[in-house]
Image 1: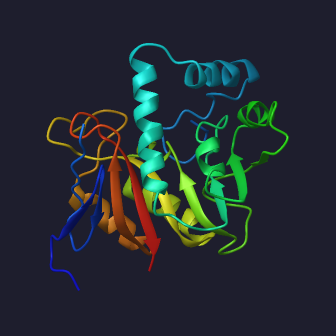
Image 2: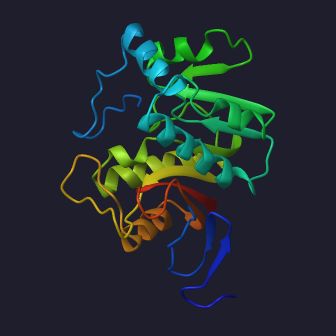
Image 3: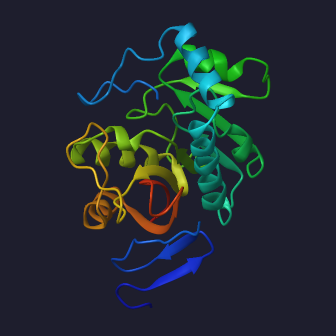
Length: 234
């Protein structure tokens, strides 16, 4: 058993034990729960197509940002093994290729039918289902893993965050990979719509959802708060 605050580095990530969740790195679906969400966004097909073009054909700084995010997801998945995964919310398929490199069964869920239409276009292999991340239409432990990319950081209330994490954990038999915004030495947000979380805020949320934080992979430590959290069920 490792002592409080022990950290083991894995290249760009860190395995987290005890109460330590720091990691040094070299180098939007419509849930109608919290007022910081915008349920109307991406309901129209034209908006979903515009969103898809923005992430599949980025230019300039957004291109670098998307690459860093994708690389963080890839690093987070390096030690994740399993046969099935739920991509929730899947959007238009931002990380689908990364998931297909590791899982045999991939199901995408999103609350926007417009996003799912784009998700399926030209990809007959993709299984997309409309649904609510807070009331997932799947049995307990239906997937080995659930990947939740770009959703948790939209919620500012802890009760909403815990409800979301519990819902995702219910359908996972092993664990979750969750995108979140965490405090860094150069980036801490408390008064913006998208807030960062401190370490002492994050761990109780995961604990309340029956999860243990195993690893954090930042997209661009310490300059960006974007991070992938690898969590296992207790």
